[in-house]
Amino acid sequence: MKEQNNIPTSKIQRATRFVKTGGRVGGNYVKYYSKKILTGNDDRETLNRDNADDIYDSLSELKGSALKVAQMLSMDKGILPQAYSEKFQMAQYSAPPLSYPLVVKTFSRYFGKTPDQLYDSFNKNSTHAASIGQVHEASKDGEKLAVKIQYPGVGNSIESDLKIIKPFVLRMFDLNSEELNHYLVEVKSRLLEETDYELEVQRSQEISEACAHIDGVVFPKYYTELSSERIITMDWLDGKHLDEFIATNPSQEIRNMVGQRLWDFYDYQIHQLKQVHADPHPGNFLFREDGTLGVIDFGCVKVIPDEFYNAYFQLLQPNIMADDTRYRQLLNELSFLLEKDNPQLREYLYGVFSEMISLLGRPFHTPTFDFGNDDFFSDIYGMSERYSKDKTLKNAGGARGPRDGIYLNRTYFGLYSILNRLGANIKTDSHGVMA
Image (cartoon, rainbow, N blue to C red; front, side, top):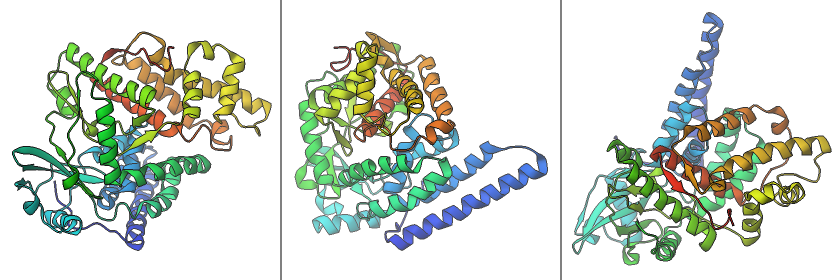
């Protein structure tokens, strides 16, 4: 993959790049409508593919929060057309990497030394490159290491990037402005934390130590003396990313085993630690032939407030779902229903959110759940498609649902997606739901 020799870092440079991309997207629409008029064919798939290519090329050059938002959208079932989802998934671990001179510049700034002066060996070519940073293989004192380096300017451009990308996302995907604002406030908070590598090292050490008892889940050791605000050094963990692992055709026993360990890892964090690794995309895990699971990135962690936790997980309990009075009370407490809603809208939204919550909670309502059964995911896609076109829902007004739920919902659907790709059948008894 071609390396990148510079990243636009100033507000003007980044805004100009967005404007140019907008022009290319506009040109794609002109071609689409011209062809539609001349031939009568509605070739929406080609339009989506051309736009996805142009947008991804631009975002991968800018990197940072803009590319991270694209990656996040690619994980949320049904939000984007397939062409966008497939393209934006590349941001998980195969974005264009930075050139080695820029890597050296980052080390010189934070350590006053080059990588060759700090490590016994340092591979100049990155092994993985994602939205926030890239990883290089290194060694020191006989230990094989992974060194994560943050792209220049990423931490300083978050707020301006989100302001620039907002109208772009609204226009491209026909999203509700008020709800997007609600979403972006939480995204901004998490991204600011995700670019603080010193905080990431601290959380990585705390959570990996707290979860060390979970059978078959392994974590790297972190080296604080070789880490800084923008660089993290940790042990190198062997294993395959999800697509590579699946390509080895593991047995159903191994698929179930590694899926169970992934589920147990998340279940313990959410219900015992009340904080969770909230970026469950495949690039953050390493799968092994013996069914063990490596966890390599704690950049995005969501702390779960007790008040929100108690109300949220009551909604998923079957006995609460059967109690109409209590269920409506919780929907009000969590702002799914608002005081300003008229009775007709309130009843309509009650049905909508009941369906959504019931679907999210389906894996919890039986002792085991087969994530390899695509019917569940067909229901998710079908519901997303149906409500994305629902004018009543779009015009309901107000940001619906608690802000604290944004990353927790994203965590669950990301987890479900990985388990589906594994085809895992696992025990889903939960401390917080089945109780």
